[in-house]
Image 1 (tube, helix red, strand yellow):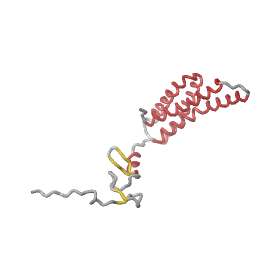
Image 2 (tube, helix red, strand yellow):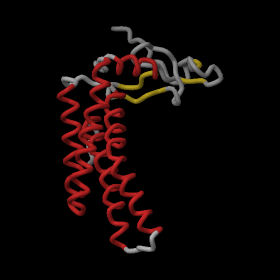
Image 3 (tube, rainbow, N blue to C red):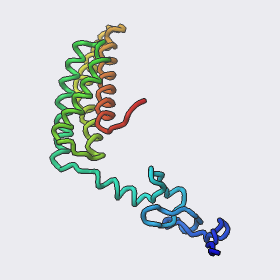
Image 4 (tube, rainbow, N blue to C red):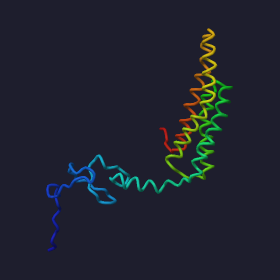
Length: 186
């Protein structure tokens, strides 16, 4: 007859302590480096639990952006967002349709300029620059509306241009961010 190896039960497995928190006992290990970790230090990946160091080390290999890419991620959105905000100020109600299109154009222009290299900071800079590019006309519209309010001209139509510029700033920023970051809204 063959001799079977005994299977260890959970009571027989020795609890270890987390590599970051020595006061916490754990049975969980990183499936890459085999370090014991508590559930606060564990990150669930498609292949199992890993420690935060292994996950961040793996993600850094996907960041391929160069220094010049960050310059493009600022300059292009600033210029394109400023042009888009001017167009949106002329078309007012159609800002709802134009702003997301401008956001997609900004994202694709940056993606083309950086030759599809990636970085977390790249899409954040792009979104921030798109927001800053939409601010000059928003500030001018706000100043002119405040001037009209100080003159005693108060109407719903004097506030509408501010609303359209705020809506443009929000929509262009969010659509550029989501388009570049790869987040899908379902």
